[in-house]
Image 1 (cartoon, rainbow over the protein chains, first blue to last red):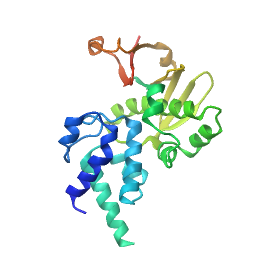
Image 2: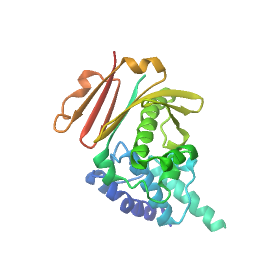
Image 3: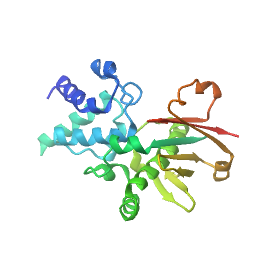
Length: 87
Length: 153
């Protein structure tokens, strides 16, 4: 799965939790979930759970801790997908 | 340093489903989960503990300069009369919470006695839209219909 494909999936996942339609439309690696997309912090947990379901991966607490930006989230997803392939 | 966090309970009800599989496990320590599940009103306990964690995080984040999303690393203990404490990486933050029917508001301070020296102003929509920054609050929290400002007296 390419980085662009992951970001496109992320955009669909995030949509119900953000009212910042313009920022969401222009989502890129530098987008910040809280400062740019104004996502409520309790909903960050929902996004992490949605990502786990969608990508069939398990996100540990240390990885979740980093997931405040699109860039960090894509890195976490890529590394977990890699682990899945190795199994 | 001060921290605060307000939860609009009406909004929280529609915005988050605390019963969702994995939700409690990602946010709360084992002891906190027990406390929630044993509670007569688990929904209120979820948001009380959440607001304590958020209020403490706002101080810890400014102190360490580290921004992250690790709610489980903030471990809460509830004492009597809405007082509590939150421990993270060897730091303790003391909290005091106000539980109302439509919102929960928690304040946090690294110093227990300082909790009594905090002025709290809570505004409900449409009175929550004004230039509050000019009032130089020590910490700000918005959620739903509410704006909560705290000041050190």
